[in-house]
Length: 208
Image (cartoon, rainbow, N blue to C red; front, side, top):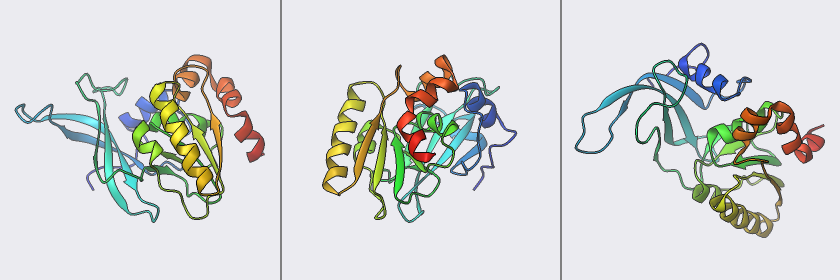
């Protein structure tokens, strides 16, 4: 309730610095100028600016929140031990960008998912916030094709395999899209928007 839209805030500066410049339709993200951070139960509470993401279920009800604490100038994540934390009922749910119908793209992190959205702004996407939660997302009843925007690591492999099995069992076509580097935001920052288009070539063809 204390947060605000991200336009013109440090949240926008931070995302722009991650090469995420197209921010239309990302109302699940908001900005909090003075968000509490407590390193552990014995430490005093600190105050940092933060991006606050709404975690919602299939009906759009909020079940949790994810916070990314930022440096005072928005140039990077805050220099703290755990600059990203989630709370609430997360299993099966996620941070949603757009409303899923027959097609949905899913990935682990918020920045990972927002990166392919730079070239596919109309495609509904969901950030599950971790590999374990990605493997356990709940499928919308209308879903027919699932794009798995995987991270290029062992945890990403495990989430991919579990998700493909679950999707196939539910009669959903699962298409895996892999980054050239570690994840899609790394591709976007290091290789540019053209690389993101290559990464998402199957999805781009289907969108067109």
